[in-house]
Amino acid sequence: MEETSDHPNPTTSTPGTTPEPDPKTMRSSKPGLKRLLITTTVLFSFLSGLPFLWKSVEIYRSQLPFHDIDSLSDQIKSTPLRFPCTFHALFIGFRSNDPDQLRSEIQDGVNQLTGESSQCGSCNVSISVTVQSPDELCSETFPSTCSYRCGVIKRDAFGGGLDDEVDESLDDVFGGCSGGIGKMYSVVVVNKEEGDGGDEVKAVVGKRRHAWIVGSGLEERYGEVVGRVSEVFVKVFMNGGREEGDSIRGEFMPVGSDGRLVLSFSLLNSNPRDWIYDWDFQRIDEGLLAPVTKALAPIADISVESQVLYHTPKSSFSSWDEKLQSYIFRTSDLPFFVNSNEWHLDTSAGASGRSKILQFVVYIPSGKECPLHLQLPNGEISKTNGFISPMWGSVIVWNPRNCDKDSESPSRNMISPQDLEQIVEVFLGQFRQLFGFKSEAIYTSELGSYKILPSERGFTEWELDVLSRKHTCFNLHSCATTLGSLSRLVQSLPRMIIKDEIGEQVKYSLKAAKLAQSNASLGGYSSSASSSREARSLAENAFFHPSIMSVSYFSYEHCFAVYSPFFLPVAGHVVLAALREWKRYKQEKAKYLTWLTRKKTA
Image 1 (cartoon, rainbow, N blue to C red):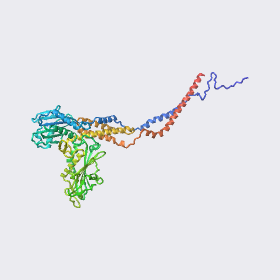
Image 2: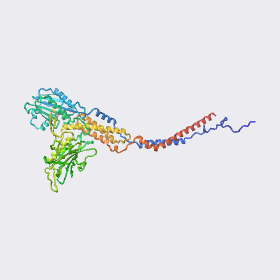
Image 3: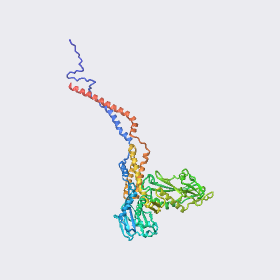
Image 4: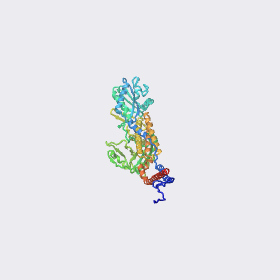
């Protein structure tokens, strides 16, 4: 008889009973979310801390106008800045000359001398001509840039009068002329009567913006007159009488990048045991230097200071000359004349940052080398007894009137006012040379020589115009270059700190540069020079801001390399744990769903 078992088969089920689940494939209880929630919470808390970490290492950067900086640089390179210049030529005593033909020939002469120059600082020339006959009948080109009233200027007014009086009278006549925009420069050509003064031609350039050429028989020398008028317009009024013309160089003028210039005057007593000299510098400053600093105010913020030093021997040697009966030093000794070890000149309290200091030194030799004179290469003695050092300053050797030594206890002497005026006159000539002008009051060319009237301010009005045009161009070039360098530097270092102050300086610099360009196009020479100086100063301040220079900048790769050893191991474990728990939860849930399905089918 077959035996049957009382225990049912676990893989089979009887009707009405619930099947037993297989632990490997099924589970009868719903999987819990506790472990998944814990691991997920840890993961999200870790991820939520990343923004705080990113914020803690974030670098503040003020937004710089990169597009405006590039636009300014491209504009200065592609379209050089040009200033409007209005020229008016007045021919007096000419009978049969057509003003339109004269203007055409003068224009051709100007174009030939300028070579159609498109360099920054050149002029957009506008020329008008007026011809006044001996009967005081006038004909002029149309349109005329000057409403000259015919007959106001007489031929005899240029006879024996003083040149300063002629210059003032021309300024009264042409002072009310309006050339539309820009400054107006005039040249008056006076054809005197035959036999009055011979064939001599007198050419004078005034201290305003006027020049005059006077001579007999000028109508017969028509081509020469036109050439000289064109020459005055271009070589004098446009280029300032300088041979280099319109070239712009980095060392154009001795002005600091912040637009400041310090004139440091030093009186050096080589050996105070022989004699001691002092000076009344306040009189020099108020009476002679104040007009100069005021005239150059649009170009540079000039301050003046002085000092008296003792025991300041020179470095070079001098030799006695029997023929001249004096001690001499030659031009070959000039590089060794300044004694940097004993001459403590760089003690300026007014110069700071990037200000420029020009040293003006009056050297009083000791009794062992008095009198001391500078011998030129041609063997002659220098009239000024001084020399200049570009971008540094100048030195004048001043010999006391009596070279006999004082007693054992020398008394203090004062330099006389007459000697002070002569010293300042030499200084002003040297100062003009440092700015690129000639110290002598004459300009010589192939067509002749021109007498230049000196100004009590050191610079004539047309020379100040030349300085303003050149200074504006150089400042705008420097501003665009500095801002371009700053833009490339900032973009190459994405973690560089850019403070709001730097951003404001850059914006104000761009604004000042645009204002300078606008003023230049309208003929505002002084205002454009001032605005360009401000633009350059702000650009330099932004580039050399202390916050840029004092911080080390690291790339994103560097930050990742620093922080990854701390966070990657923890982050890896948290992420792997979350993934592993999610996978386990999905498997357990699948087992539970399988068990439910078997339960329903059973």
